[in-house]
Length: 318
Image 1 (spheres, helix red, strand yellow):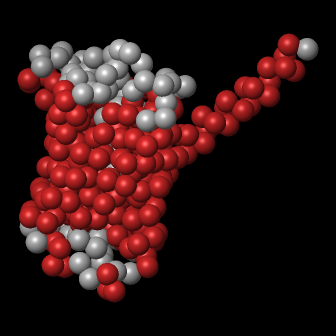
Image 2: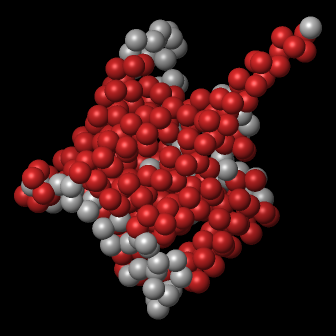
């Protein structure tokens, strides 16, 4: 009788976990595709800014209805910390991705962004004195080799100069991820995420206006596909994806959740090839295999402290 009573609960929880993993794997892997479609007729920084202002506002509206713990105040220090995190993760991180996808194939961008754990491991060792295990060191070497293969001219992947520019995004995301483990951000993951999105979104809009993107906005020339892609990025990429990620952190082992870091690039490359007809060269496949293997090595023995704030993903989800 006990077994019969528990089995439906197990099936339900198992189904929820599977759905959450599917959301993180597929949705975040697909965001590179939809960013590429959105920036075809929308300026990249303004597009990303609008996306995160709306998503952040919705998250804060939802979380404001929840009970506020006495030990989790929201004041000037928290907003300042979220602004710093938003500048690193969204303005430089995601803004760089949106800008870069004008010139670099979405699948290649995803592979470059997958180097975030490499940068986290290197920066943690150099600046925070974190001790790297041998498998993490091996992962760094393999990942750097994969990045070098991807950037090598003549392979047909993309212009090396634009790919180097895209590499600013994972570097900024790595710095931001390290900061979020130590900065005075709100303890409630969804609150912190909403505040970061709102701050980062405002900065993206300011940056877009500063570089003159407003003059390129012609509403009558924005395609339906771009509008739908922006809607997808707001609803699924930001709201559903982040919610599933945060929920998974409380219901599945962290090592299992971290697997999205090397599944997302594979999904992105596949979608870019299947939907956009992006060319997948032998050089891209070799580089991708090396980078994905490197991420798997590093995440199997993470160099970061075991106790982390789960406010944002650590591997550059877009």
